[in-house]
Length: 254
Image (cartoon, rainbow, N blue to C red; front, side, top):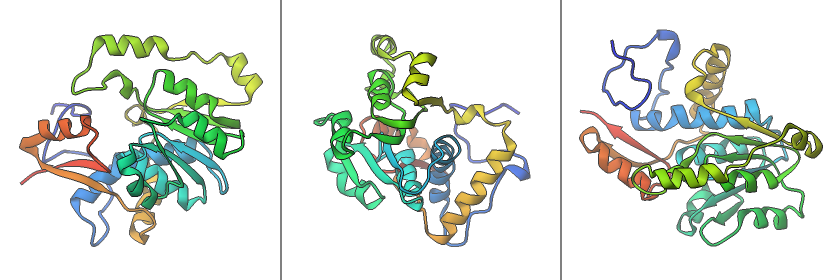
C-alpha cells in the first residue's frame, strides 16, 4: 500500500473500522465529504482549543469556506456572537449560516470593525488560516483572555499557484509572539494542524461522535458549494483559487 495522507485522490481506501463513522440516513456522500475535515477542524479550534462558551464572541476568517461555515454553525450552537470575513457577494450566504457581522475583507478593516462593534472589547476566539500580517491583526482583535487559533497560511498562494516571492513577503510579515507579551496581555496563540493529530485517538473519536449527532439532528448542515467529477480535479482547484465557492468543493467518483 502507498500512504495517501496528502496530495492524492482515490475512490477506495483501506482504513481501520474504528476510524470510520456511518453516514446518517438521508445524508449524501457529497455531504459526508464536506463534513469530515471541515467540521472536525472547526470543532477542535473552537471547543477543544478555544474553550468556546455561551455568550462569547468569535471571529472567523474565510467565513464562506468549508471550515468557515462549519465554525459559524458550531458557534451558534453555543450561542456565540459571530464576526466573519467574506467578500460582499457572499454576505447573505454567511448570514444564513450564523454570521452576525459579515465583514468585507476587500473594502473593510476587520480589526477596526471588531473594535467598533464590541466597544473595544474584542473577540474571545479568532480563527485565522490567512497568515502574514493577518495574524497580527487577528491577535490585536482579541479580548482579554482571548485565543488566536492559527491553522493555515493561504496568503502564500494568492493566485492559482504557489508564488515564492509572495510566500517570502508574507512570511517576513508574520509576527512573532513573545511569551512576555502573551503574559502581559493575557492572550494566547495556538496552532492547529489536523493532519498532525492522527495519534490523538481520544479526541478524534469523541469529536466526530458529537458532530455526527448534531448532523443527524439537523443542528449543523454541511454546505456543498460545488461538485466536480474526479477527472476534473484541476478545475475544482482553480474554482477554489478563484474564490468562487461558498462551502466545500467535493470530487465525485463513478
